Image 1 (cartoon, rainbow, N blue to C red):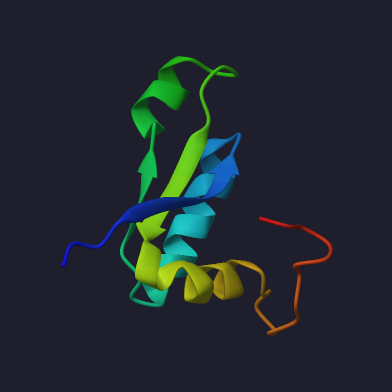
Image 2: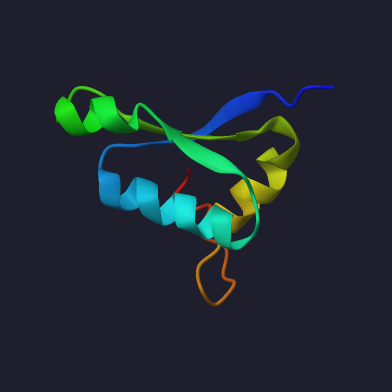
Length: 79
């Protein structure tokens, strides 16, 4: 069975997108940034979309909604 890739977050700058991607990769979750090169060429028009396997959605969102101390950020900064 093929894993379906889904978008779990949209970022408007490269720094935030790369930070989120690194958090997931540190936790051994396959991910990539869709529109990465287009967004860099067309500043302000295209967005960075963080894509993961559908099976990793819940774990990915949990990781992205926690800070370094493990506090839940989902209310303050929803992804």
